[in-house]
Image (cartoon, rainbow, N blue to C red; front, side):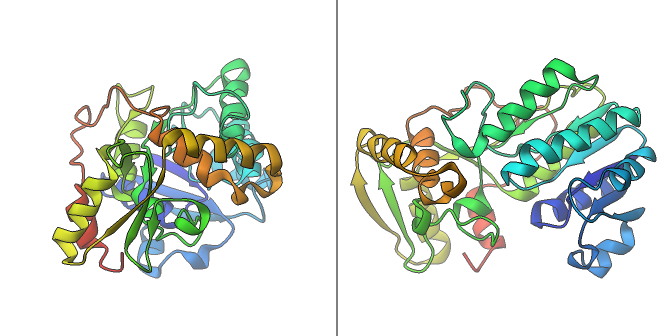
Length: 304
C-alpha cells in the first residue's frame, strides 16, 4: 500500500515514515523542506512531493492522486494547520478517492470539549465538526496524552518546560507541581505514537482510531528519573489544582488567543491534573504494540 504523509519533516513525521515502511508499505511525503529528511530515510521513500505551503492545492492534489487508500496528517499544532491545512488535505483526499485519513491528533482527547476551553485545540475541534458534517471520509484520531518529548521539553517546536508553565525544568532537573503530585499524567513517546498510527491506518478493523498511552504521576516520574540517571529530582509544590485553575482562567481572560503561549501552558496543565483529560479506557493491547516504559524512554534519550 502507498501511504501519503503530509508534513512529515519533524521528529514525529520521521517516526511515522519508519513505522509504515517497516511494515512493508510504501511512503510518499508532501512537505516544504525535503532537506530536513536524512539521506538514509529519504532514499526509502517512494517519492517526495515538494509543496510551497499548506495551501498549495495543486501540489497537494497531485500528491493525493497516487495514494492507494490512506493519508496521514503530521502537521504541528499551529492553528492555521489544525483547521485550514487539514481541511485542504481532507478535501484533496476526498477528490482522490482516499478511504482512510488519520487526522493530526497525537494529544489529549479534545472531542468532548467546547471552543475556548483549551485555546490550542480549537482548530482541532472545528476540523472535527466540519469533517463529521460534510466529508465522505470519517477521519481517524489517535489520542496519546502528552508526547513524552513535549513533556520533557526536548522538542524545539514546542516548549512545555517551566518557562511556559509546564512541569519539567531541564536545566535544574526539577518538577513544578500543582496539586499533590499524585495526579495522573497520560503520556506516549513519539515512537509508540507512530507505531499505533501505522497499525490504525493499515489495519483491517481499525476504522475509529483509539486511545493509547502510559500513565504516571509526577512523583513516580521523579523517582524513575532518579533511578535511571542517579540524579536527584526536586519537586517544587506551587499550590492546589484550584489555585492553578484560577491562574489559568485569569490568563485566558486577560491574554490574547493570538499570543496564547503566554498562558496556555497553565490551561493545559490544569486539564491534566483536574482529570478533565483522563482516559478511562485504553486500546494499548488492541494492536499488539509494545508500549515503552519511562525507564526505557529515558535510557534512549540520555540528553534529558
